[in-house]
Length: 146
Ligand code: MN
Image 1 (cartoon, rainbow, N blue to C red):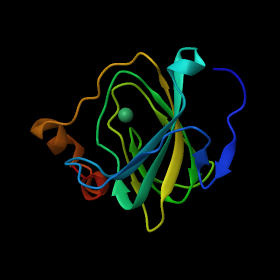
Image 2: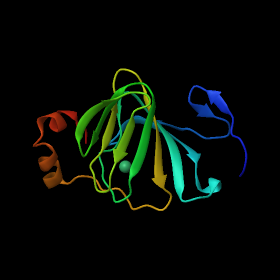
Image 3: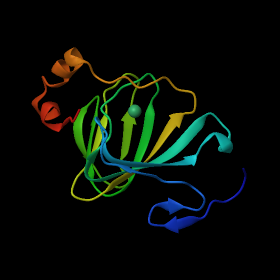
């Protein structure tokens, strides 16, 4: 599929389905996803737009594939290998291989673009031991939601 996809405003693009916010996940809250460049775009990458509603959070996970993230909307905080950092539009967030990560929105929605390899390994969620290790850092303990 070649050509332009028109931006509609409001962080929506023509013809791209937005998965609705899922409020009742066991390990995430209020996260919606749009695949901006998927398999139909060719290449080895996918680019997704994620939006976390106010107070929501993504799954705490890790995997061998990396994430390359640019925040484009709102305000929030991100856990990566370097601990918890505030994020705002046009901050970049690098998630290296096998690094625990989670994004949380503050009082307004947090939107970010995320590039991943199209072929990628399945995310892993922390077991009790990994959680205990993460919680040794008080800032991380306070931040994470599982
Ligand atoms: Mn991930």
